[in-house]
Image (tube, rainbow, N blue to C red; front, side, top):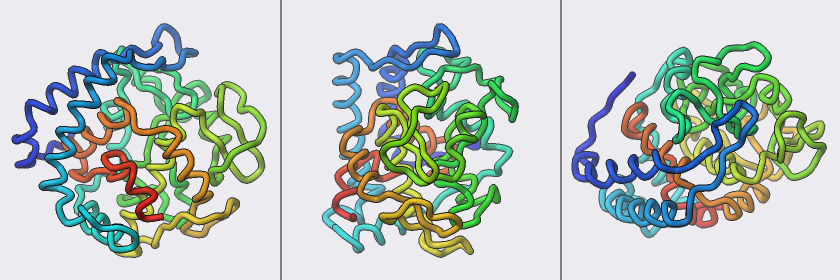
Amino acid sequence: MLRRQHPLRRALLALGAATTMLAATVTTATASSAGTPSQPAASTASTASATTTAAIAALDDTYYTTAIGKTGTTLKSALHTIIKNQTKISYAAVWDALKVTDQDPANSSNVILLYTGRSQSKSSNGGNTGQWNREHVWAQSHGGFGTATGPGTDLHHLRPEDVTVNGIRGNKDFDNGGSAVSGAAGNYTDSDSFEPRNAVKGDVARMILYMAVRYEGEDGWPDLEPNEKVNNGSSPAMGKLSVLKAWSAQDPPDTFEKRRNDVIYDQYQGNRNPFIDHPEWVSAIW
């Protein structure tokens, strides 16, 4: 496992420890592989939110200092300059990383799958039916980056998911509507789009928008951008922007998503998804 040390981390050690302890107490359903996570108790969520607010204030004084007060393309450019400084990992290393970033808070032997919400054994990963694999939320064919080290291995948009459901999503853009996805309650799909369950709509939106800020046509990778289309095919674009913005507002970052952002920053890549720390920056840019 890659480990990174940050001066900011030392300054926030107490806050980080408190947040981790709080996240570990969140109750999720793990009794069977068919269960879905429940919502954290109100008192736990409130305390975790207060702790995170203090941590974000410290980040604004350090990590985000050059972005504070900006809007529009100026903010997007400032955030790109900040988050492009990252450690890259191999696609093989993603397997083990996801076992940490997406660990079930109620069962350290399991991960939570993105679309199904199922709690499943970390060791049940692979390519067979019933196993979980590595879902590229920004479909790798949208820009042709594949699984090479770079956008294809960026943990900020890679999540564990059921092999079959991952195949159903394929490389479809995101939009509302369609038919119910078998084995993944609350998810819908049609010929050119996919709608995730309500509990992770915001997660999906913020992952897509992170990718659009992080990858701006540098490093030999395409310039990734959201647009108002579906069926984008191999273009370096993902839609539908208006829907993604609505999803981000509808489903604000929860304890699980915030912890995931912290783990990626502290243990693996050394960069953050700014839209988890500052969801209001979505509308400030787009």
